[in-house]
Every structure is written in structure tokens, then in C-alpha cells.
Image 1: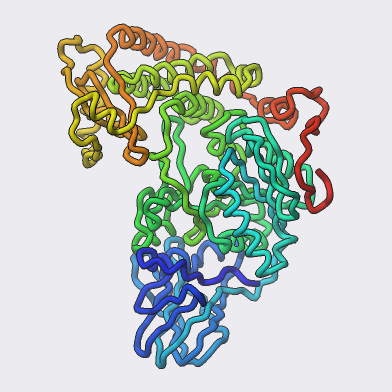
Image 2: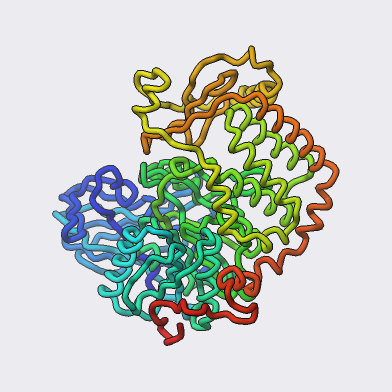
Length: 604
């Protein structure tokens, strides 16, 4: 069976080293590489290296073979890159034209990988290559792609065309994949198509959109796996094909593993945003964040990365039976549903170099109104999964409240405080409150943005801009946080009547220390909003913070008991009430809102 094809990218010089290294001429028209006599091309790259350990450990493949399609005379060499970055030659074969090259079994450990090089003995044209195995597939796989969308028709249409093109090229994929599109805006008016089914849905956020897609997929027994994807990602179909082949090859011991896709940044497409994530109950940590994946040393860091707790749902594939075994996501509306579901369900998570999508950087998308959902859902997840102590939870809450006071962003502080008050009400709050109405209330708190020119005129700034200062050392950060807490008690006379600028997506508290007027500027949108010091608001939320800290310390055990069993919250019956509020609880099909095309089985 084929494991994956060697890919050459789109010809962008900036990204060549994600696909190949060395002197060669890439033809985008024919998707080939021309290698002149004497030149060497290496495939020790992010998308084309062979992660031997992962295929051996999860799929039992110990003898991969390399199939080459090359015109000309050349030498192919296969190497093992060890954990220290030293290459060890395994195979050297002088040959002409296409054919299979077998590998020897390397003494390969976690942190190493295989790759091959081509040295041209005459002018050669590289038409393609692929890694294969003589092993037969362990099991049949059928993928249901679940995509939640809200008024992003152009992004969605482009991705559907990419899938359709792959099926036209290889019709076997028509029986292997089907797309469950959940339309939270209820605006898609697409014709019926065997590739996808559209489900109009109430705007229940990303959590509700993915939950609806998972719910609908689980009603069709032929689907073995659900692949959750954002609607605005950019991806190669080879990533889906590679995921599919891994699932087919998983051994019985690892058959319930989830498979995740790494996120690369659209703004800097060679930079890795995250290789899975860690959650400690207080904050998130992206594994191997901000690594340049053109560098070989960073490939090794991925090969030997920390075991993550979850993978975000920009691209994450799980067994379909998880819905029956573990239920649907928590009704969080937005933020943290992928974290909580990963903690609840994952036995194993497979991540590897080469499985990746491109996505917009989140610092450019974050809105302060999301502070409510972030803090509320983080806290519920931490309580449910016993991820932090009462003392750490109290300190974490105080940190974000006092940081908001330093930023003079009382809207954000109000939302964080409200998040705690709602958590205190217990899990029934999430079922008693209509998330559509609540989201409107939260969004009404959003700040008013002004354009760059208006801000410059109002505040006498010659050229409004913002550059984030270099990160301080750990000691300076700790000292800065202490000062930040103290500023909440400074008399107003100690605050300067000065206007400063910080990043709207990721504001820095130290930018705002002892300043009364803060411009939160978004350089991408060229817009910003203004926060100003308010003595009464500061006093109100300073007191609320101290009061809440003591509630954490004395009543945290009570909160843990409240959330000790939330299975009713994420059951299919609970979600049906949110999907179809006009129906009786025992009815599972929407009244007057049928899916707009049939699935492969003919069911709606």
C-alpha cells in the first residue's frame, strides 16, 4: 500500500525548503524537478521526510520502500538522520529511470527520521516518488469531513473545488470521503452534490457547529472516522490522503488513535504555530511554537516533541465511535471545546512532520470579547479534569483581572468577572441559557473601532504604529507582574496623562503601566479602540477580584463537585434541544430544515 507521495509545493522560492533542498528547477506546469548533471537534491524536509518511528510504532511498518519515477541516470541514497542531527547512510544505488528502492532496517529511535537524496549523473527530470510498504491495510476506512462555517462561502467553495479535483483525478476517493458542512449562518444555497451535505444550523458557535456535524455523521454507520476541519484553512489533498493511509495501516493496538494536523501560519507559511497543545488548567502551551520548519534541527524537535494533550480542530481526525463512547463536545459555544474533548477522549494522538495545514495567525483574529469564553471554558475544563489546585486557580484568575485593570480595559475585566459568576452557577447554566442570546449580550460589549487616521487626529499621533518589544527574561517578567498588581492600588496622581499604543490582539501590560489612555491598535485592519482610566471602575473590579479569590480558596471543592459529572451536558439528547429547540426532546430531525443534499446512503 502507498503511504504518501513526495510533494514539490507550488513553486514559491520562499517555501522550497519545506519540500526539497538543493539546486533544481521546478516546473509548476508539469510538477517536476529538473536536476542538472552533478547536482544533488535532498528530501530531508518537513513535507517529505519519512518519520520512521511513527510508522513503525503505530502501524508496524519496519521495511518501507521508496518508489522513484525519474528520467535519466542518477544515484539515490537513503539516510537516517539521528537525534543529534547526524546523517547515516543506509542505501546507495546507482540506477536509471523508475523503480523501487528497498531500505535496510535502521536502528531508529524517537527523534530520528529517514530521507533520500538524488544525485544526477546526467540531466534528470524528477517526475515523482512515494513511500510504500508491502504491508496490507489493516482495516477499511471511510472519512466524514466535518466543516463548520459562518458566511465564508468563498473559502469553503475553494476547498470543495480542491476535494472535487482530487476525486476527478482519482475517482476511488468518491467512495472514501464525504463532507458534512454545518452552516451556522443558514445562508448557503448550494445545489445537491454527492461530495457534500449541507446542514443549516442555529448559530451555536464553533462548538455547536462541530457538534452538529459529529452528531449527523454518527447517524451513518459506514463512517469509521470524523475529520474536523476549519472552513478557512489552506491544505494539500495529500494531507488527507496521508491521514487516510495512516488510519488504514494502524495496528489493532493503536486503532483508536487520533491523528492531528500541524498548523503553519498563513502570514509566514514556513513558520509552525503549533505541534499540538498542552493544557495545565491555567493556560495553554503550544508545543514547538514559532519554529522555522525549513531548518533540519526543527524537524528533529518535532520528531522528539512533548506528548500533547490535544490537537486543535483546524485539522483533527478521530474514530467515529467516540460520539457513542464519549458523547459530543461541551456546549461551550466557542473556545476550548477541542481541548476538553481531547482530554476526555484521546488515548493516543499521532502528530508528525508532513501532516499540516495553513491557517491565519490567531493573534490577528483575537477579540477581547472572547475573554468571557476563554476564562469560563478554561476554568470549567480545569475543574472537570482536575488540572489545577484552588490556589493556582485563584492566582490565575487574579492575574487576568489585574492585567485588565492595568490595560484600563474594563470591558474585558467585566467579562472575565462574569465568566466566574456563570461558572459558579454550575453546569446547568449551560443548558438553561440560550447560547445565541448570551452571545449577543457578550458581543454587545465589543469596543468601537476607529480607523488609523481618526485615531491619529484625535490623539495627535504623527504615525500610529506598534512594534512589540523583545521578550524580557523570566526574572523581569516576574517582577513586571508584581508591579502590575501594585498599579491597581496606585493613586490616580501616579498615572501619567499620556497616550500609549499596544497590540489589540495581544496587548502588553507593561506598555500600559502607569498610563491613563491606551490605544489598542490592529495593524492588519489599520484600526484600533481606546481604553481610558476610570477610578470608579477600577475600585469596583479591584474589590470584586479580591472577593472572588477568597471564593476560589474556600469553595473550589464545591465547584469540583458541581462539575464532577457533566455527561448530560454533552449527550446527543442535550444537543438536540439546542439544535432543534422547536421540537420535542425525543425528536431528532429538524422540522422544515432538511439537509440540502443526500448522503451516499440516501439518508438525509
